Structures are given as structure tokens and as C-alpha cells.
Figure 1 (cartoon, rainbow, N blue to C red):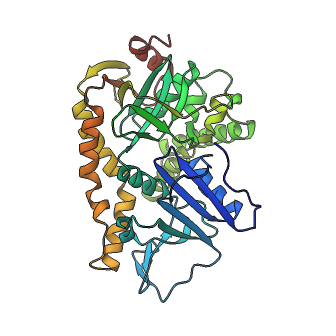
Figure 2 (figure 1 turned 135 degrees about the vertical axis):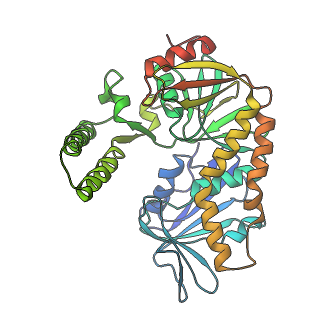
Figure 3 (figure 1 turned 90 degrees about the horizontal axis):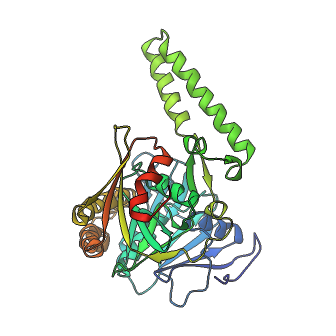
Length: 384
């Protein structure tokens, strides 16, 4: 893609992001501001051939009237606007987002962000909503192409989507997308965005030459975190008071949640991401199981459509929660489209999945990547 206008880190300018012609995002701010959005959407910079659906405006100071808090440092409102005060990861932000304007398609939906935010809260959820409005579908899934066959792997969080993608990339598959992929309304093609891929330490332990994915400093950090968990297990196995045991368990949980690195997908593909698009030929529902066995079985796609409608509703919950707080702040104002998104997704999922060859992949967690590869062999002709 050709880049949109370039400006230095402090000069105000405009940067456009084109998500496969489905949704356009325009950023008004500095190059540093655009980099915040690029970390979320990937290097999708490119000129738009239509008015953007989303406008992200960065400002030094977000002016407000006297604020009323909604919840403890989560949301606020003044007489005219609604504000987010927390981003993912609980970092403090100040973002204006008037959610009733989601229904006004005559102009871009505007999000105003006070500089200093590590990310634009709810941006991916908003992109997904506008993809739905365009007639396509955002699916919580990964996608790849292997020997000319386009595969979409979907399921609930921790179901094994990324593990399957990483296994197939090791076998020579072409990367399309991870976490979120975008399917045209007819179900013929699927496209992705090059978001960083979260790679857990147990995955690195299963591949040759992990150093090609992560620098030595990251691998050292992961080893230290693993050692801290092992020490915590020993401490919890001793005699502790209730309060000390509770604190030890909490620390152990927090440390386990940090035993990962976020890897640029370009590193996994040798620097060439290609078109980030493929045909949608096969559907795989990935699920983890207490059983140590890994298996594949043919299933009906229609229950998968219903299941993924529930998954999409779950993934949209932070946006829905903000909408509830917005309605509390401004009784009578709401987004009818946001409220109808679930039923529209369920209908579209049924149409898109209808007739797709569909398989269930069941595996233990953490997964054994070699076993995933063997399970996929019968339907893909490899890896073996």
C-alpha cells in the first residue's frame, strides 16, 4: 500500500488507514499519534477512496465541563459529552466518545483522545462494528493459506486459534490474520490485519531456534518469570497463613499472565506479509480440553455459527458496557445499531458458514504443536 501523507513526530497532519476497503480510519495528529493507532491496526496506512468511517483526533488537553463520574474512574460525562477514563490494562486515559453518533452515517464517527494514551480504547471494537455496517463480518479468529487452501480457525479465547496459526506458519503456510479477521458478506474471501501475535513461553519451548522470533533479553525475562512461578509453587506448598497464601496465589497468577512476548507477524513470515487476504475454503473450530489427546472431527457449521455469535457478543462487551454507561449518563440517547449488532451478526454468520466444510480441533492446554500439525494433516495434506 502506498503511504498516506508523512509528517514528523511533532507536526500535525493526517494519516489514513485502509482496512481492505471495508473501513477507513483517519488520524488527525502527529506522526507519534499515528504510531499509537498503527500499533493497534498494523501498517495499514494508505489513501482512502471514500470518507473515513472513523476519525481519531489527538489533542494535548481534552476540554470538558464539570465532570460527573460513572463508576470508579471508568467513565465520566459533562453536560454534552461522554468520556472514557480507563484503557485496556487499566491505564488512565481521557477520551471523548459520544456513542449515539454511531448511528449517524452522514459523517465520520469521531473519537477524541488526549495525548499520552498507550492505545485508543475500543478502537478494534468500533472497527468491527463498522465492518458489520459495511455488509461484511469481523470474526474472532485467525486465518492462513496452506497449499492454496484458505483456512479460518475460530473459537473462544484460549481455544487454540493462535497455536494453530503458529503451527501452520512453521509448516510454510501464508499468514493472513490473527485475533480478528474480516470476511466478505458472501463468505468467499477473508482478510486480516497484521496485529502483533502473542506468543507464550511454552510455545517457544517447542520450536527450533526460538531466537529468530524473540531477542535474548525477552527470552531471559521469560526464564526469570518461569523461575519466579516455580519459587511461588514451592512457597505455596509450605506452611503459610491464609493472607500470605492468598497474596502468593495472586502474585503467581499475575506472573503467569506475563510469560509471553508480542511478535510482529512480519518476523514469522520472513518480512513479507503479502496481501493479507485469501479465499475462505475451510472452517475449523478450535477448542481446548482436559484430555491429553488432540483430534479432528467433521461437524455441522450451523452450531458453530450460533456459538460464534455468542463469542462475538462476549468480545464486544467492553463496548456494550461503555454504551450502558453512556445511556445512564444521557437518558434517551443510544445507538440502535450497536444494540442490534448481535442479531445481525448471528444472521450473517449463518449465511457465511452455510455449506463450509467444517472441523472441530480438540487439544489439551497448553497445546502440543506437533500434535496439532498431525491432526490437521488429513484435511490439508500436511504438515506431517
